[in-house]
Image (cartoon, rainbow, N blue to C red):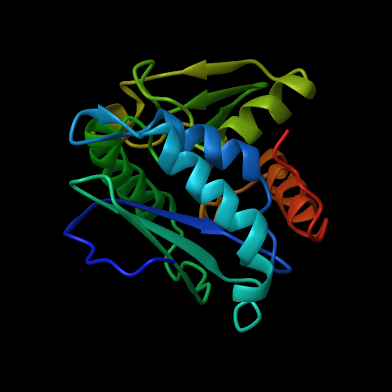
Length: 215
């Protein structure tokens, strides 16, 4: 990259890579393009720059962290930098821990338009997605939404879900987090067959090596 001084980051994306490739590449780029920086849409030039670097330099750059995390930081002027780090799984994955992460992510979405980590609940044969219609979906949540519909599971978006869960508890058969960095994370105290199946589908996607999987 050309040398420059990056200002204070106002947007940081953390995307899981695997086998030196970026699963859901096109989904990530679409979600990046839907974000805002200081109220202004991410430029098409920035999205194109990220895509170019992913396609041209990621494989070589990821030699030391082939299954790590790609981080993209954007400052208040729209300048960006990319780096690679090691992946560390979550230590705390009880339902309330996942709710806290989703709440923090919601606050990020209020600034940027996209929540990188969403809470999902299974109630009967339907899924409840804790998101606002004003937010664009992250790459990971768009994948789970598509998978659910393929399986014939209705998906309901509920912008009050996080607040309701915080006040009244999580009344659901299963609870799981969907994250651009961590994939599908079933709650340790609210896991079940459906969450496990979505996690297996995500893991299968990761294992597909460096094939572009963003369609």
